[in-house]
Image (cartoon, rainbow, N blue to C red; front, side):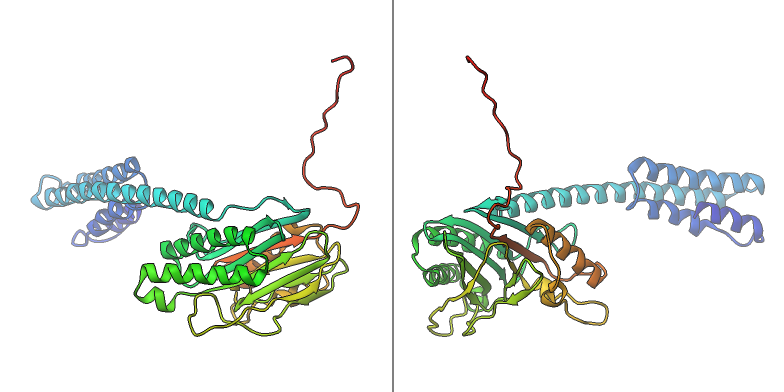
Length: 358
């Protein structure tokens, strides 16, 4: 802006002035640059005007003095704007750290080995600097086998995080105490009902959560699933084949108080080497520039992955490629692998060697 003003003033008659360019320079610098660079920009603008008026021998006149006074006033204003922007950015950064910490506390990443199964989980925010969302996942090793839940809360923000905390807490307790997966689902339903009553108002009526619960009993090559209005899980076989695990009887999401709907679980074989993939609609409803939805079953069919972490990384990269990096919804991904017999543990091991005579 300053260089453009200098060129403009040199190439035009004296009746034309580039003062608007010099005035605009510190104002433009204020929200984008540091305090020192903003001050330097204001000083540079004033020096440019002084140099031009010295060159034209008009500096002692009243008009150049008014121009310099205007520039000085605007430069001070730019410094004030810069301070306001910096304080706002600091508060925003602090809020982001708090939100990320709260989300990680509510939604901790599960261990990579639970109940003899290899586990990987990932939360992909729609925006790179957002950490507060309504997608959830949890895995726990209960007396009845490894139990899992993946869900999606209606809405976003702190209210969604509060609902996530309610569901995760209720799931961990119910998974330890309920003998059946249907019982776990009903416990979650009651927890949401209590939360809706406590909140009152709109959330008590319209608050709901789509969720899928799964149970892999210890020592059995089976998986039981209760689906409450959630995208259907996918079972990937070691040879690249896959199955979409749709419910026999569709059910409403959790928290939709439209009558008594008994839960019913479905069972599928889970041979060694297969991978169970659960996800939220941020994956299946991701669209490209032409409005075409991402189809995880079609994109994964025929592909083989070394482990669950590699599967989730490939999915996240493929979704970004499909959407051009412009996703509009968060997505939670959870993959569980029943390892084949004799497959080595991928975790780091520590070998302890005893010393003779010690």
